[in-house]
Length: 348
Image 1 (cartoon, one colour):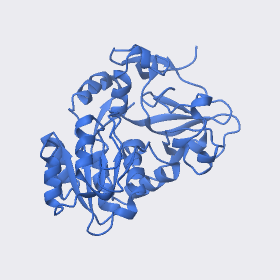
Image 2 (cartoon, one colour):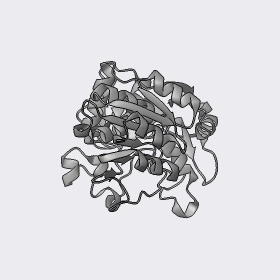
Image 3 (cartoon, one colour):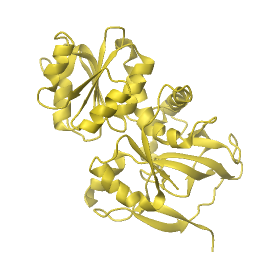
Image 4 (cartoon, one colour):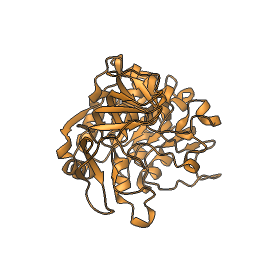
């Protein structure tokens, strides 16, 4: 019998995840086996676990965790680019590596991933909430260069995703501009810091929870606004009636996209990052003139390198609570109820 390890698996639709014993994977040609040092918990996991059986695209049971950091434990035959013992972060949105988007480092937008059955760890293939994680290629690893693994894990998604969304809107985030962050949780509290580090714009944070608004203020929001029926009017008042040049919605449900639309200035960007899936009607007269609406997904590997550099420079820091692997099922319940301030990180 080979070695076994603990893993957090979602094993049946509608049931809570369980901690189970599974075999430690063996790295094949070109692959890397990581001993996991930290794994982030994400609302995307909650979304996956809320899908009905007929909509579940992944094979169950599935080990969760798409925010992974670890040390290289073993290399498969012919693997080059990393060395045993090296501390690395996992770039999650794996692609084919050879299509036009992958050639630009944008594996998050790989043109052939669906066709080839390539999925991210924790979102279709075994994830990082385990003692070991098998990574398909060294190109999906980024060296930490001394960065704390607990800090690095959330940055692989909760940091990378808002970084990518903000970076696309940088031309509009000039001095005198305003950025609105809707949802000051795991991604939102990092978006606020990224906006402060990358731009001179004024940052207005919105949330429905007092503790999230307090966190938003702590991490650098210039203004905080309760996300209710008066929120858009308050943004207009704070911007002399003009609205915000960039609106980042980290929730994406019907009330938040409606608020995002009402906050937007002429020629604004609305970036709907949250995965709740509510539509935002776009058409002449429905939004201010020349508003652009996008739904970005994750970011490029080069952008992950940039996010980790910002963290090493002290310009962005995830607010984290850490837990042991055995606690994970109950922490998911707390996470679902909004009981985690910032980000939860599992230490296998």
